[in-house]
Length: 506
Image (spheres, helix red, strand yellow):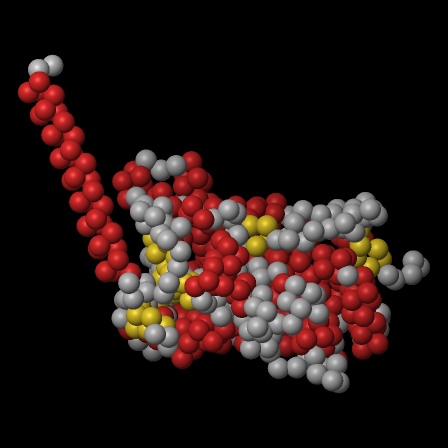
């Protein structure tokens, strides 16, 4: 190489380095201008954001630690994607209630659109007339079919099946499938007026589908969601997701078609019948605008939402509650004593007993606080340029409520890590007003529809199980009930339990 060639090569390298530095400077300037009025947070690195700071999948816990330095409202970047994380109840209520219309939309992604047929559901739909109509219909359906004696009778049927199965277990076992089967059996009854044996192949297959979909959503579909080119070369994970979604929709379509074929307007027996009736009434009144919002796809997506609205919350909370009772036998005995005094052993606890089972309900509330099974709920999207406190929030910004942080805020909860049911009770041992920072079902315009189902069904299932069984860990087990999972869902750890029948053998 000649001297001239060496000089030219050196000049090219220097030019490239200058170009790289200039490019990075422009990137940082644009990044600074875009984010300078957002809430604070740790140093965000190009391309990876704050990923270098996360030491576990419990990102909601990691972020909450940052609040000690940066305050309760944080700007967080995961890869190239930025969101705002709210970690205190006052700001959460500002977002969810006071400025609910500013943050009422949901995020959209490729995988969500596949699952929801382009946002025709309730949970992920964008806010507007169609969503308002669907929430109104779903709320009315839930009030009609998932409350009072109808709910009680259906819970008792599912609960008795669960009790009969639990009685056959002679060795320590993981109660996950038993609890899931009870909750799922109730949902089958409410949505389809069907009663299944827990070993029924279709019943078990649908449980498996929903479990697999949960695992996929938990792990994320980042590549296909955010790199469109890869949708033409999908990963094995995404292929499995597509297959499961098709099977999930095919199952619901089959049930919907069966109900259409046997529909009798004088005999509306379940939620599917009710949705079909709503559509037929719109047809009879020739309301074209309503019919466009009540297509068969819309109705099946509404059914999917209702079918799954309380599923994970109920089954995971119930599993955590059983583990907590095994961990705290003195608290379990107080629950049993209250149930025995209010109900006895001759019948299962009913809806009318709830007002006399305040301590039992308080135990459930405390279990839901310590083990927040949906730690960050569903993300909200800013519908306009707005503010959170003094921070400017651009239109389209994702805002996430850290419900786990609300439930572990030492400013709001004394002895925050201690299991204390008494914190929810009045002096008369009655359930008091809901604590301000207890928010497992969110609030405002996107309040979880499953709340009105989950709370009474959880109470009946839990009270019925503790009425009948003493729940224990095997001898020598020292449990660590730290949840596993991540930002989407928290699961109980893998432990086996003993269910000791309290009723004397006859």
